Image: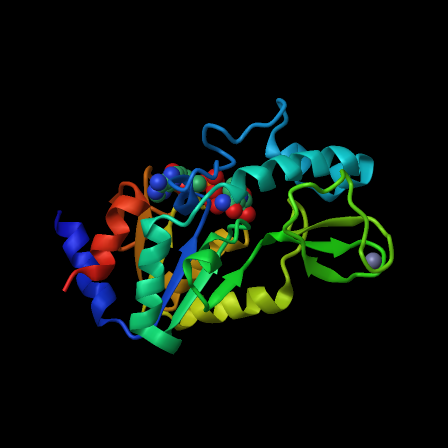
Length: 242
Ligand code: NAD
Ligand code: ZN
């Protein structure tokens, strides 16, 4: 396909590459997307559970959902799309930044290092009383668990609907978007802001933008190349092409 060859050529010649990933890159690992099949739990929509209001009302319910999601993700392994981004990072070095909306930790598990996790990480918890954050990989957590430091109520260290992103992480992501010669946007529906705004920002700052998604998105009209297909099937070839 011509657009695949063109994407490979542009990527190979770029010094500074920023990548934005969404739930779609982990779909082939078996992690359900929020908007695709398998995203529902006990007939709740994610928008009804991933909010500060839901947690204030019923922390046990929210934690039961997170325990279910943590259990699903624990069984998942990085797929060839995650691995291709590790290769791309090796090729670009300090010119590479991986911005992810995913909370599943699969980029890190694959071996990526220059990662900005915009929405946090499902394997970390944060205490609502003393503020301590720590990694908690146990799959046997009570719903809700209590803080190992102070006994207070802990929450998942993720960004919920209606909450602000970490300003330092967001600032670094803006910088990476605006400095990029090429931005690669993989498996994101482009509806969750401010993450979605990084794409027009990169474009306005002069980046060549390549989108890889199963379906057309709100970004498809704006980008330079829009490739339709599965990330795990197409990305390794795009990154490895000589
Ligand atoms: P989304 O669910 O809104 O959209 C997923 C996108 O991926 C869709 O556009 C779909 O067409 C595409 N897609 C699905 N399978 C694909 C494949 N194999 N290859 C390429 N594209 C594919 O996801 P989003 O845009 O990331 O927004 C959802 C929010 O929910 C995020 O902010 C994220 O924090 C959270 N979330 C995270 C995870 C995770 O960590 N894996 C999973 C679900 C939701
Ligand atoms: Zn505490």
